[in-house]
Length: 269
Length: 265
Image (tube, rainbow over all chains, first blue to last red):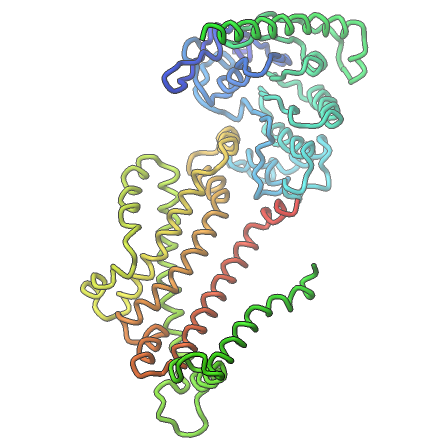
């Protein structure tokens, strides 16, 4: 079990029925994420990267191929594979504290067991003093912190993050990235992080998988050999710039190919 | 505008309508003897509530509270019954496709039948008793509550359902801790519509199917030509309906505090 990768996708293919047509969202994806590794999936919008994450989370099954977590097939959502969604998806009728402890509470854990841990995590994500606030009273960044705290409190082996900072303004986004780096240094979970932001992927991840436009395939995997612990300052280093240029070229090539292809499809019609 | 300054504006239209009513009667714009003046109605209403110092032959003297109690009890019982059935059923219809397929078409078929059309059936089955009235009130209030509850359940954000499942919630927990609170605003909309229908139904039922309550007084007063009592009854029903709606709104405000915060954002 310990030898198996935390997440493994084997020749995964996913089709959706769209009326009469069948749309191929993801095709022939092979991916192994090692324990405690931070992997980012980077791709243009509509490349099926969220579909990939939904399959790992267990919300959707693959049309063909296998999705494994710790060597066992994924057959549904589990607290061991926690998801931070793009929208925080908080329960608006619960206070910050009650949102954070929803997981352990519904799993029937005694309050004495999770209260102290929850308070600690709320402090780590900078929400001390807001425990009794409702989500509606918080800013977008603070809501996403609650979304992260809610996941951390369950101590998942695997964290799946679906463009968690995509809806935030640039300022808040970089603060949240630093927060995530800090949190990850402390817990070292396995992370699968979906994004379309090149700098975000390079700043956070050990490994960046660049995806092709639809149908999504993994075009190239790039190892980010920037030492940890990292902070926002590494984004100005020469190594970071070299990687950024490399990934940018890959993405650009992909966007051009996609544009040319859709133009051809338009002409054929 | 502060609440205090807004208050006078609330009174402008009612005051104008009462003035129009007063002059229409006093200046004989309408045929004499059919519509009583506001003063007459107020006077009769007072006697109806508090009785009369002199011996009186009026059968209505001092009976207002009794009749209000009859009608209110029927509304509360019928409405309570309707809510107790409609909310769980609505949750199940919205939550489970099989339940929806089995139950929903039948509800939608019966729904367009007005409760007034059920009157003969109710009397034939339950007789001139309370059960008739409760059946009509309950049936009338049932539809808006069940339909709005179902709607609320189906409107639940998919991400919230996924988040709950992910955090280890079983289906029953998801229903109780996510779907129900998420549907609650919609359920309250149904309850507000339902209490309105309940007051309509109680008047209809009491006019024909039982021999007590405001609806009975209304019809009886009409037969003996006491239009002043008829109008006083109409005001009474309006007032009670308004008050019961306020009670539901207050309960909703309390239970949905998180929502008022959202609205003020």
